[in-house]
Length: 449
Image (tube, rainbow, N blue to C red; front, side, top):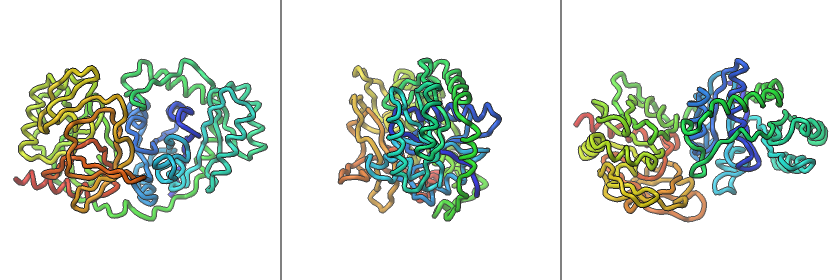
């Protein structure tokens, strides 16, 4: 199985991976190529950029969530088009806890035998850039780093550094991404804001694409991607067994500006287990879809739409009635907060929510229980996920136990009943296919009853 592929990685966060990845994807499209993309790590928003702004197929890869063989299988199943562009996360070697290789961009690249292009912020530096690159090359035990792009420097100075890099380090310098004050992507909660919130974003991406096409060698980049080793898929999603169902059961999926964080891999697993996904909007709709056997309320930014969510009393009543009837429900982070009695905004004002779960959510001003977790539901079923939220509640649930992968920290979490899991953790279903089969069975039981 030969899939041209490249990873865009960097020495640290803030080096320009996202800007260059988006610009590169647009430049490839402009050149008549058909790229797809992946994001390393538990990131929802970068894939949303790729899908919504660039119109490109995008998914996630994470070697904490899935072992290397299953990661290869997910990539092989989802990669499409002429070339796969994989965006790294944090620094190249920063994995679980910031100190393990597992879960790092490098670990994903190793699993996929994927060539790496290292984006180096060369602003305010000269020959010192060579020392930084050499350090990364010396640490690259699998010889995956094949090229560099110098970010935030002038094309003229890049042309001076290029022969030094190539002659002294034996690595390709593809060129530079010039510093341009017009290119700015703002941030929220240490993550990028949603695509629709940035005026002129499409124009910005086209500007980046033009700069990259003018200042880096696309031909060399494509050759590096095309020279990637043939992938050997040793495991076809491991123990995943899909149930073909000609009469699928219907799952109502909240999808609008407030609830938009979903892993593509999760939704595909549900579909392949005989589930029909039916989208609805808690912001705009007045009733749930008909003939449903389950609810899925993902994360997002409900805190930005509290007045509108609170005012939609018909939808709140419909969801509360459905939960009181025992409908199996998966609610994560913002979706979980929406099911509580109320959410308080940053100023302390209270807004009534669904009221299917007792309690209130409130702004803390800091990240709460941030990072990877393994969830144990006290019946022997474990699934991996992560938490990333600035809100907390006075009723997080006590039916499961979340454990950090480093250290010994653990805590009670999640409301688990009638096959439902409602709590802060974002779950990655391919980390335990039994989780999906159990939930689907709960939906079938609900439908029969």
